[in-house]
Image (cartoon, rainbow, N blue to C red):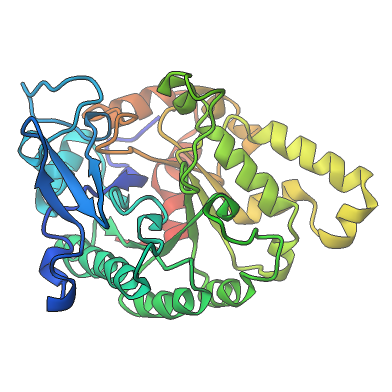
Amino acid sequence: MLSPNTPLVSVDDHVIEPPNTWVDRAPAKFKDRVPKVVETDGGREAWSYEGTLVPVSRSVVKLLDGVVVPEEGAVRFDEMRPGCYDPKARLTDMDLDGVWAEVGFPNYARFAGHRFFPKNDPELSLHCLESYNDFILDEWCAAAPDRYIPLAIVPWWDIDQAIKETERVVAKGAKSIAFSENPTVLGLPSIHTDHWDPFLDLVNHHGLPMSLHFGSSSKVHTSSDDAPVSVAYTLAGVGSMTAAADWLLSGLFDRYPNIRLALSEGGAGWAPFILERADKFYRDRPEVVTKVKTKPSEAFKEHIYLCLVTDAFALLHLDEIGDANVMFEADFPHSDSEYPNSRTVFDEATKHLSAESTELVAHLNARRLYNFHS
């Protein structure tokens, strides 16, 4: 149960990029080509970039009191709570929600920055990605460095540029890099190849945690094309389960002892089953042991952190998962968020836990992983 003085640190919230994010940072040659907000038919707003319009759905933002738009309808910025896109207003919403600090993932830029995979012009793509990072590091997080934990994106389509951008953002204070839960869906090599080794060498050197968000492969799991979106949201943990199995059975944790992963918005209740299965194959398959030196359930304790908005089952079975491997997330301003009741809901869900376990899940695990000490 939460002590009144215990801060909540959320490891997964989202920044709704304000309309001027890219336009204000564009040189003359890109001024008309970077993402910008435009009006659409019916007086709605959408992002326009590379010939594509992307409306902001009402299901992924918190709206001002009294604003009503059609279900799944596009939302205007003047209908959103300012805390969606303004870093100072966000602090007010965090205070209302009982959250002290947060890690902010992109929204329009997509959870691993893959909005900017090159279509026509790699130079434009790289500029847009770097502009997002400059906005996050120099503007958003700079507004309250004691409460915002900087997460950056990198150009995964070019491993040399990914290394260069990682070095740049680490020098500017980034605490984590967003990675894909399954890069093969993005047309990139899997983690079972040596393609990622130069990047992983760098991440391991810096001890820089990687944050793998639900949907960061640009794919969500569902049963069929005509299944309601609620099916995909119910299966949100499948991507994290896949990523956990991939990494635990890759041998990468043996090669890179300083790598840590946060599996964001994937829940945690599935962990005992996945660990039991991975341990079984580690025990029964000689070819697994030749590649993986550390028993998966032991590697999990050292390298993987699970994140939950609401997962009562996981909190009831924390002994089997490990209280040092679970972190809180508020998911503001997305539809999964319990805003403005995140602290109340978390308090109720942890009332059976010891004070020590509650402190770990509420903030201490996040502080350790992200090297955040405010």
